[in-house]
Length: 468
Image (cartoon, rainbow, N blue to C red; front, side, top):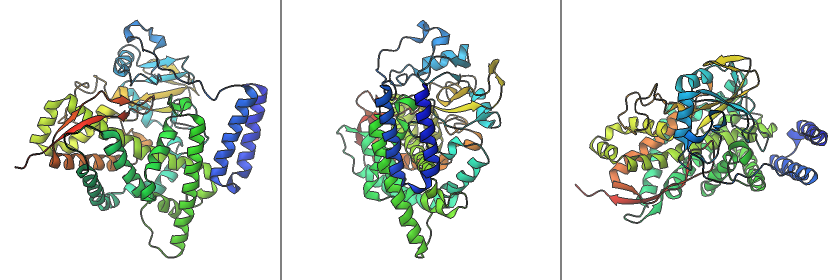
């Protein structure tokens, strides 16, 4: 970083700290955007190098030190399993010195991942859980350590409390039935946009009490946050991201004030996320901490979108690739809850979480220095043969299927895991009522990312269930 760039950053940070509580959130986002565009003009440097897809070589031809699991096309080119397996077998705690995202350690075996995830005293979640850098500096409780993490998480955890989940189940089932009943029979259609995105958007709108007619905005904003080139190797243009995030900020500031006014007028509090934030001592003034408010909204939207949405698509693909498992499911629908866990393991919709070593530490024979980035590759640990028998096989009756890594462990374990499982369970219960066959009729299109293991398109053809 040049002296001029350091000065620009210092001025920006000081101004942000002093003025943040008094400037509307969308204007702050626009201000950061203007700063970055000015910096790009003055320094003649692009935001971040654009990733151009090229064929990835067979892992057997790559030197062990050159293996880079942060490559954003590994999933798309179906090379992920081979690359991660080689690290698990030969170098389970692996140092990559020259990735586009800077140096980092890859932790690829199940037990090592659990150790890192559970030991927040040794490995910090701050300042970011993504492998690269954030295009917008926001605070999220998933990227905080205790006790601050615990306070912020507790403020919104009530939305997925057992009582609230029970009350939501009938609404989820009704909306799932509406979507499935609208699907064409015998005609190919895109499952991702027609089912996975639509159901996810409906659920997010419910959780946030967001205007139902604008629900697809939530999915779009989620994609902007999780698809930045500099954070995950994604394909979203940074200028587009800033414009979208500013729009998101404007909507959620308005929603916050609308909620506050209705509560002040005597409306009975509901269990949506905004109301819960306003009701907690730790977050009732969050509107005065705009970047933390924005960050937590981004976290809740991405968490509620990517895990469920890509598991909804991944489950269809898995049962297409393993038709004997679909036959088994139709014979014994009571296997659905166990199958849901197997889908989440097999898909691993979010590939990793990043930590930073708080002190020098030894991990599986490797010396990790204080300040080093450590990446827990859940997508690798979920296929670790040392713990999971025949991991490449999709088995709906797998023993101990819930013992996957996809939701994490320790204090940062996914808050919405039960909600995600319930949505997937209801989806498959309703699918079995209606359809005898789900056929994937074209190669799925996979998103460009090292973080989200997801699908942008999955063409499916349905066969209706015949009357008994």
